[in-house]
Length: 110
Length: 120
Image (cartoon, rainbow over all chains, first blue to last red; front, side, top):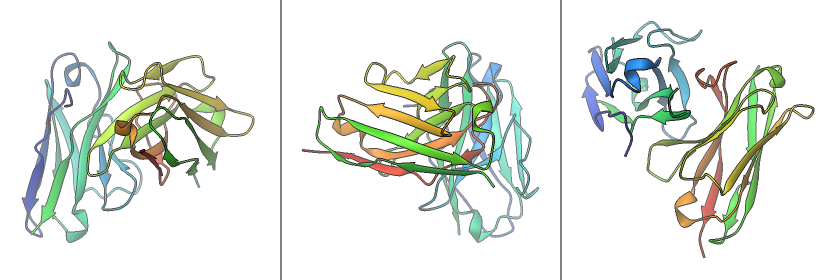
C-alpha cells in the first residue's frame, strides 16, 4: 500500500476532460515535486509530467499537471482512445530517501 | 537517442540469486543517476533502488534492503542489480530507468524491462 493514494480507476468518453488525483501528506507531496508516468498496455512507463506541471518534449499539451498542498492532479483534455493506459504519480521523499509511486489509476476511454 | 536494455532475467528458486544488467547508450551515462523499478504481474510500479552518477549515494526500498545490491560501471555504461536471497514476492518485470543529476529528478527514460520469476 503506497503512502500516496490514487483512485484505482477513471473513465471518460472521447473529447471529454478527465482528472486523476494523487493524495499524500505534508511529508511527501507537500514537500516534493510530483511526476506523472503513463504506461500503455504491455509497454514500459513513460514520463508524462515532471516537476508538478512540466511536459517533456513530445508530450501533447492535452496533458497537464498541477499541485496544491498535499494533493496533485493530472488532467487530460480532449480524451482520445489512445490515452487508455495506467497512470502513476511519483515523487522522491527527501526525508526518507526513497522514491514513492502511487498505486496507479487505470483510465478507460468509453 | 537514449536506449536502455535490461538483461539477466529468468527463473530462479526461492533463496537463489540473479544478476540483472542494463546497457545504456545515447547519453553520457556517468552524468546521471540510474534506477531500478519493478512491477509484479498485474500490479503497480514499485521503486527498488537508485544509484547516483558516481555511486557516491545508493538507496534501497525496505523490501529489498540487505538482499539486493545496485552498482554501475561507468566505463562500460552499464547498471547492475545483484539479487540474492530471492523470494516469491520478488517476481516482477524489472525496469532500468535513467534519472537526472539529483536523486529526486524524474525518471525520464525507461528500458523495456526483464522478467524475473522466483518459483520452486
